[in-house]
Image 1 (cartoon, rainbow, N blue to C red):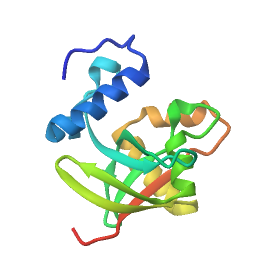
Image 2 (cartoon, rainbow, N blue to C red):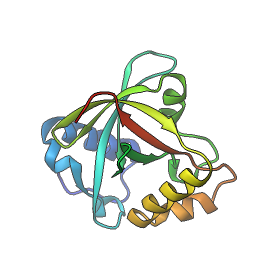
Image 3 (cartoon, rainbow, N blue to C red):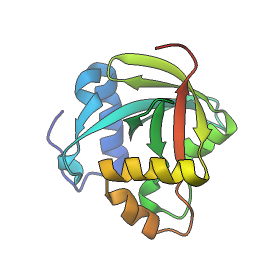
Image 4 (tube, rainbow, N blue to C red):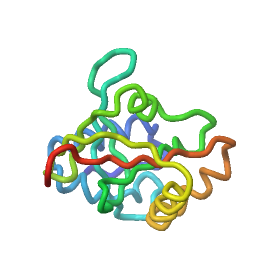
Length: 153
């Protein structure tokens, strides 16, 4: 991946990461977040969900952790007051696809609540402590989503 500046617009570096995922999925999977102000190498998957209004596929790289149930992702939107569009898309249609490196999976999104959400939040905050700052910056409870494979690994 070309060197990036932390002044890059998020839409630009996200588009670059999506492009990298299609060109070199292994490099995109273990993504160096430092050029955009992140803490270093982080595991990312590429979520493909259908737009709730357009019906068109929407791609987004997201930090994740694998669990027995599937893949954990966080709908943080950097602590913004509203949910990210991809999360709203999954509420409308939880059937989606992910790429994890060169692996491809059909998954269904499940929103977590209560103790399960708290436990999985802690897993993700350990990976990326900035999530705690995002939660402190907003009045909404940031959703934690589990992407459960619909076919055997």
